[in-house]
Structure formats: C-alpha cells, structure tokens
Length: 338
Image (cartoon, rainbow, N blue to C red; front, side):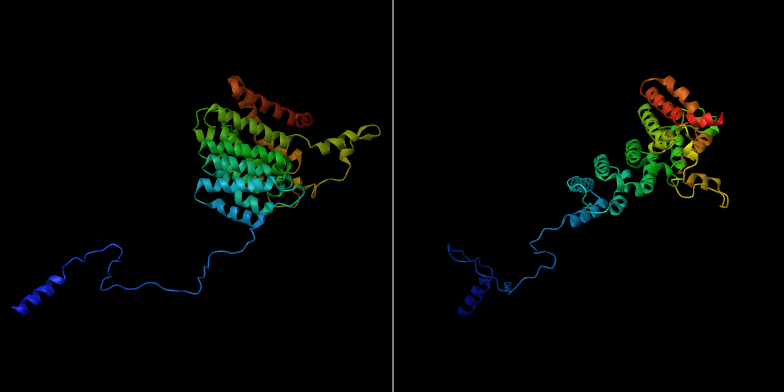
C-alpha cells in the first residue's frame, strides 16, 4: 500500500497548480531558455550621426527626386519647398540647382492629375529667372501642347495658363523654335474646330475634345491664342528702333541695308537644302511667320470670328481681342500685297 500511495502522489504532482505568493517571482518552466545577452557596441548602418545639416543644394536634389512620388501631397510639398528655396535666394546668386536640372524634372507635372500639384507647379515656374527659360522653352512647349489636348478640362485650362506664362517669359524663343509656330497654331485650330478643310466654318457640333467644350474653355483658348499671335506677328521693339532711325532724310529705309541680326538670313529661300517640313521648321523671321499664318490659319480664323463675335458675352469679348490681334499683326503684310 505504501508503494501504491507514493505512485499516486507522484502522478498528481504533475497536475497540481503552483500557489503564487506575494513578493516572490513566478517559478520558471522546465524548458525555459535565457535570451539575455551583452554586447560591447551596436552598429547602425543606416543612420547618420553627423552634426552638420544637409546643404540647400542637397535638399533641393532630394525634393526633385520626390516629384515622382505616388502621393499627391508629397509632390505638392516638394514643389513648395523648391519654390521657397528659389524665392528666398539672394538676387544675383545662382539657384541651388541649375535650370537644366529643374525644368526636365518638373515639366511632366503639367499633366499631373492633382489640381494642388499643378497650381504649385505654376508658382515654381514663375519663381524661376526668365533668362533660364529661353533655352528650355521648346521642351516645355511639347508638354504644354500635350496638356492642351488632354481629355480632362482642368488640365487643358492649366496648360493654357502655362503657355501664357511661357510667352511672357520667352515669347520670341517660343514662336521661333522648331515647331513652335506651326504646330502650336495647328493645335489651337484643332481645339477650336477651325479648319481650312471645312471652308473656314466655325463648328459647334464637335466633341469636347476638339471644340473645347463649354464657352468658358473656348473663351480661354481664344484669349490665349490672341496672346500667342501677338508674340509671333507683332514687330519686336528692337526692330522698331532701327526703323525709327531711318524715317527722315537722308536716311531712308535703312533697315533694308543694315547687316542682318541673325545667322543664315536667307534660309527662307532654301536654295540648296532638302524639301522642308513646314510644321517642324524654325521661323525666326516675323515675315515668315506672317506668310505661314496667312496660308494656313488666317482664313479659317477670320471666318470663325464672324460667328464667335455674334455670340456675345465672354466668348464675344475673347473673339474681339483675337480679331484685334490678327488685324494688328497682319496689317503691314496685307499692305505689301496691295
């Protein structure tokens, strides 16, 4: 009996619950493993312990890389930081990053789907020095034309705002760059539905992607076209100064005898060149732009403005501004024809 009672007591011992007492630690399990360790040093490979803050140039480069971030807020904040960095720089001092690095990174945001990002982009472009815009105007114009033909109305209107800023910053370079004159004119005519193939009749039955949609968008397109035509058809102030000098005896028509102010002054004759692509041609001379405008767009625009002016309201006012720009820019061209 003694042996049997001892065995039963040992079996019950495995299922008995240990009684906990206040102030004493809980007993450890039989399979407990001690995981404590001691180390002399800890090395963090991805943390900088430098006491020097990053330079403005490094921060601008970092925010330029964040312009491709998937978050709209991050792209907007990066543009805001760059705008602040450019506006607070001292006059005459170079930018933290050159324009040749900034503009290729920000120009694709013209087509961004976020309105906040686009508006911040316009503020950034306006903060850049105008002298740095001229050499990059042709690349910006490609994205502007892509925005002008976008399906979203907000992006089409924003692209027109960027084009107006671009003309104000580097108007001569925009209208004289390769494809800047003919392709942009063709884009405007396609948006407004004014084509020479239709005998110059103004159509309002086309889809929104071609006719511009509502009257407000059409009025915006017509007012921007007027600004574009003024930049390309009106004479430069420097050329007007030369003419003013030769308006009195004995200096008559001296502008015809002075040395040309541009290289390859007789390139418009194309004496020994290959057949031209008029759409991709560079029209550096105002007379060449007038000739191309007369052959390709003037008839359609004049015929369409007759109907647009009758509409009245905002559309009629925009048509009146466009008609004045065409009349003033082509006045001397038609006088020479007579």
